[in-house]
Amino acid sequence: MNGLAVKNRNETNIPLTFGEKTELLKRYEVYCYQVAFYLLQQEAGARLAAEEALLALYKLDGFFALTEHERKEKVKAAAIRHALAVRSGRQPS
Image (tube, rainbow, N blue to C red; front, side, top):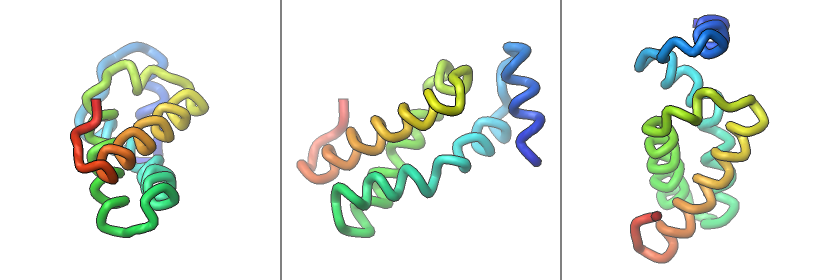
């Protein structure tokens, strides 16, 4: 997919499919990992934090209705929250 389907479906408020949601989240995969790695300075923890952050965002239907800028801010916040949780050994809230 080239991303147009996600944009067009999102503008008409039609619920996104699993594939469309994952396609949209893939756009933020590297950024999410980078934020987590910056905080943790270790690959395994950053990978775990990024995975958990993206999974949490997948479950938020409102995330997919946000603008590009708002989604990036949400990704950053989730990456930070999950990285700090990984560092402290607890589950993020």
